[in-house]
Image 1 (tube, rainbow, N blue to C red):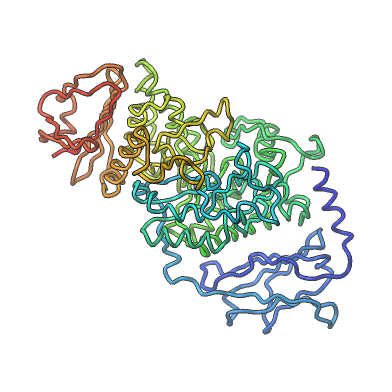
Image 2: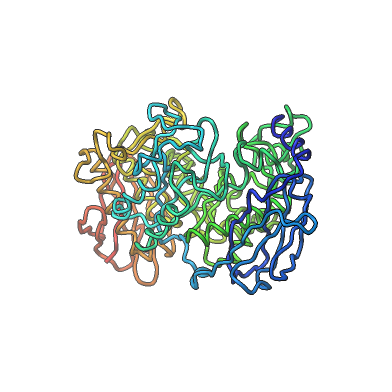
Length: 616
């Protein structure tokens, strides 16, 4: 922390010679709904010179800040007739540098770009651990950490080409959207593979590929009627970010006068955001404290910072033709600033979906973060955030399948979780999951038991919302976070490296155990693709009895019955209890087995089994 402030202080004494070293964003587009563009210009002592735009273009504002190495120039792109103009740097009458700024033409369909929704299955990949398609970029000269697959927390060499090479596998599995953990440059000395300590927001990490490779992946997904979801981080950057090393303003990041050299770790209590009784001291530490020592906390209240983050997000949507954002650590941000951020993006792209990582434990706290939430409104707040993550369901699901039935245990946990749906203004636009890159692996919790996996997959594939699965779970991958840390839940996908002895990416070479997981997942997810009743249908729950939970998804055209028996013994259901949902149907087709099921009297449900029945 002390080092950062020293660099900031020294920048004011930079040499008089100036040249343009960086311009961000490097280019933009004409035809945006918001024509105002803020251009960051960086160079040694650049503020000591005049900034002049070519072709008689008048800047709306030229803003100089306390660090003379920065100038922020705001223009109205609607007032610029040509496709490019020059940013000239002058010392008196002498020109000492220039930058040709390009205004590209937007794709005609860009503003109406489709985004991920409840019709999709989101497949989450940690790129460094999925597949190595280009061994030449495993280590690169300009980046500190080199590939070393023997180190659990090291770089392993997975890249964008590895994902592109395996798109057939992902598509055949039944996924329709791919969420990658951050692939922007993360040039920290160690532990950089996860990507959440980004050091350049406009550049893909060379160890993954290039900006062009990232756009190619997105386009190849779009060609398959699939989409790419970017993991966006607004709360913190890496301590080695070039702007952190030479801060534009001291309040670009958060400092603590009573911290060690200005640093203080977050207390992670983001419930203070809506706690009307919270102390200001606790709230400040939660929101302004650093996530970790290498992740300075960004100050979104600073208008220059907020504009920078907003434009960067829009730049990536437009450039890479993205299908959505997942935003990391959403409740740790300044919520008023983030409401402006989300609105600016969705104003530009009305169909664009953004899901926030809302890691909270109750539906009341989580739902407050969704756009137009009544719980948020009670706190005089509207997030403008379209989607949130159902962490309540995530927390309850393993307990629901592991516990004996009680008033609020066993399958009643799942029922209670779903009975909170009324709190969400758009329950179909909530992401549902049972694991991700930060959690214990499901197959570790349940000791690679395929029955427990099939029950969990059946639930998240048929309840309301957007299902998300984590790479490798579909072939039974395990990982013990308690013993092996994050690295163990982020193991390399078997077959993603040429030297791997076994390849699970090819169904023909999967082990019998892998096949059982994979084939069930593939059948279920490909069935789900065309089921509007699952995507947007209504839900009817029946209170669990004898640890068996039954619910129906229905619309005017069809009805699907879902039965989950988490007991160690078979259960016989009297179907008369469900007559209001079954109605006149006497038969149904069980989706995963293909068997015809009689619905006239009783239904025997085997132990530790789920059934998905399309009513006839």
